[in-house]
Image (cartoon, rainbow, N blue to C red; front, side, top):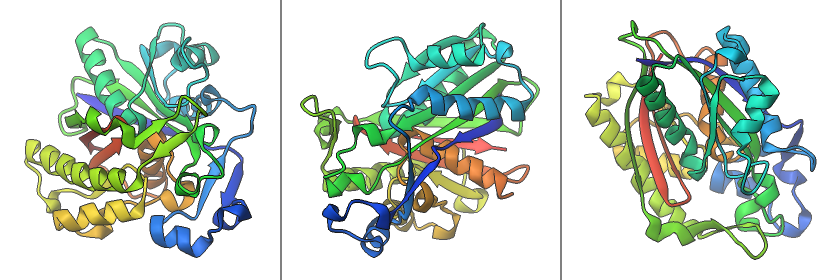
Length: 313
């Protein structure tokens, strides 16, 4: 069984409130909060890179796990904003900075769905190779691909990183990462992409919203069915933190209690593949994740992509 051994988090120092955004955007805190649930976000300095944030999250996760960097067999960095556009992978840079000399390393790009894809990939590699430990880190500096004159996108995104140390522990039966479901719809790729012309994100908000509500609902239903879970069996639902309205709509479509759905985008904005580990980090710190807790997680992202999984702590 693959268990979550520890979680780390890293954020830039600079916090930007809604009212701190450029006046030229012609928006305000009330409008942004009412339409997205977002109140602030953290933004990197110009000289900060993806691996810098990732290093902070990974270092904390390793310290909390009591695992040395040399013991890590695999590092997967899920990101849409790597240090280099082509190569080397950001995961290799993280390996060097950590001193994880025995780790196999690569990046995985599935946008906001990336962290769940990365966990599933890492779990399979640990089991197939008999490896013990992996680091999976979602690290994003979305501010670098955001057009700060485009009100439809710039109010949404923030920078941050979240990392898991996962462990291949054969004797564990009641804990761990459970079933995984996923899918893609490449026909919707044009709904959310980075333009080759100016390097900024472009988004069809209506199309992404409709896709997100549909696949988040389906992912939760499918993974719960695979695990034979009912709503009463689940302590929390931790979905990709893109927009509070999307989560509310999915909860309503499922007929589930919205109080079980975690929403932390108010503090961080949409941090893409980092959003789920950041949310779980905060929950753990706040004491919400008790022994035996069952958490269902779902995500959607550019591609278009989606995924869902179950965590037992």
